[in-house]
Image (cartoon, rainbow, N blue to C red):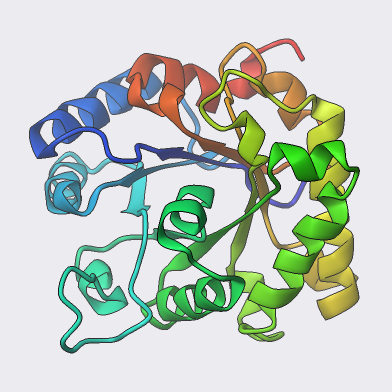
Length: 261
């Protein structure tokens, strides 16, 4: 596969800056002890804003290959927007990634697809890669409308990007009913939607472009199920939640190629 897998750990609202430093250090040691090859699997942590400077300091000081990013970004470049964090601020901290449109942001903050697209644009404008989250609630899946619903999100968000910027984005399919619940989509479920996303991207931008865009799966990913999920042809990595708070477990997830599917 020409697409380099990406394992991105979303810490959500967990770990202060001291805990973040210790967690990144332990993750680095766990992967180093396993002779992990970062050229084959990219590893990133997506941390609260207050952790980013500390993560930058330790990764630079120890010359770590672990990348990092933020969990949100403002659509505004600067100005009177109390509590907002701009793409320029994140870029100054050398963030590689920004999560946009996570289901929790959509649910608790009312973010629309248009706003998610604007945030993706802001991240790209700051030289960072947006991880664009899409996915359905349980009722939509039970109604058999999960593919159509997710593709509508793709259409709306990517309409903000266009053909030049789209290849620089990452998509994360996260069935909302599987986030933090212990429930997980089967590998076939993940492939169904991830494959449909890639087909829609091919319709929008052509097959060659679609084959370069990484599509992640997110939703109760663990070391026990990651190999089977990653065996699917259109799953290019994981957006890992709770399991990424345990650096040894996250390291095992990143080493999915050593597991039996």
